[in-house]
Length: 94
Image (cartoon, rainbow, N blue to C red; front, side, top):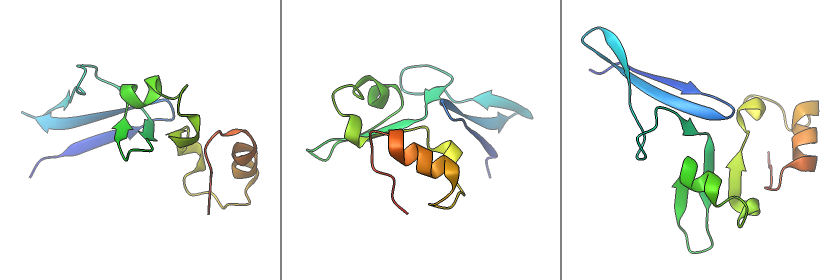
């Protein structure tokens, strides 16, 4: 059974597996060792992750999700979540 490690970062994320006793980072589809922690959804139902999602954020801000790591595990009424709801271009729901 493979051993997988995931570094979920606020800005970028990284995935590695153990091969021959050492960690090996899995590059993304663009060959990069890190991937922007961004996902996006379009009106036609397309879904994007990483750099592709980040690049289209300017034209699709309401459906481009980023910076959510700091919200994970927090209550909807927590000060950090309240502040994020005021400034995030996307909807944050409970």
